Image 1 (tube, helix red, strand yellow):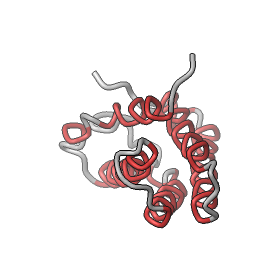
Image 2: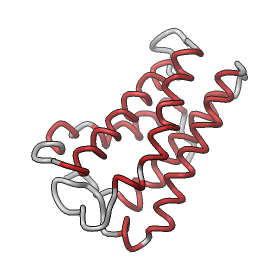
Image 3: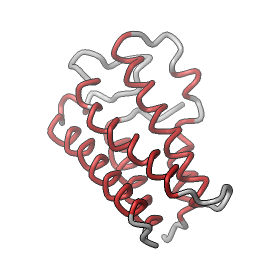
Image 4: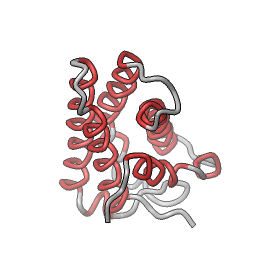
Length: 150
């Protein structure tokens, strides 16, 4: 099955649609990580809108958004201390039972975002492929470590 970049972007952003309700009742580190994921979602929207041609391409703005994803990806593991699962968190128990994979997935997101920043700053034409790498890194982690929305 072949997906176009625009389809991948929609598939990536779809799970974030009910976040407003998911954040209800969140406090402490759970709220912090939900807010971090919101920051990443907003950065993805900036780049995604450019990738889909909905807004004019702006390499500087896209690189800034990609850098935000890179920086926040490094913070992910510290926002998942053991014992912070359960509602309103959407983290599966696998976060803690497969900690090494979880941290490697967060690291892979940071690397993919760094690659995207570099492509954008160098104005290389493959920036959309690098953006797909960021989308794929997010999806890989969410598939294993995030509860599906009802």
